[in-house]
Length: 164
Image (tube, rainbow, N blue to C red; front, side):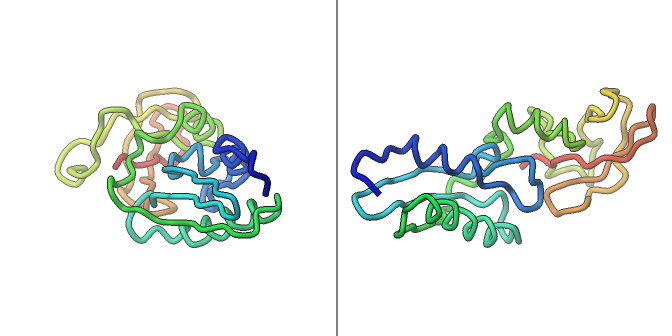
């Protein structure tokens, strides 16, 4: 590592680290990278998990270290911070577009899923055909951060990335 390494250099490397559960998203797309500190002999990457107990976070930490070490950064520290809690608002617009293209409906702005068991779910657009005529099949999808929806027009099931 040289003394001319910048935060932007590190963030560019982190663009190569993908989410193991949603491989089209990078850790920067997800918004889990809170800060990067490049010191003379060490790089510290500060992350916030998408939710408490997310099983992918250990793999993400290992992948962050590996990506930086492959680029010549020997001393890499990954620090987890829990406050403020991660929110789907931190997913980048590019990340939202990548989710759609992958077939996962991105979080609906302004919706809160905390009361989904007691009220109507958010109006979610089908990532296959674009229809808003969809329904929640299950609050629990392929991973804990997703719900299962179905389009009533094209009849295709799809995951919806839940808001929190």
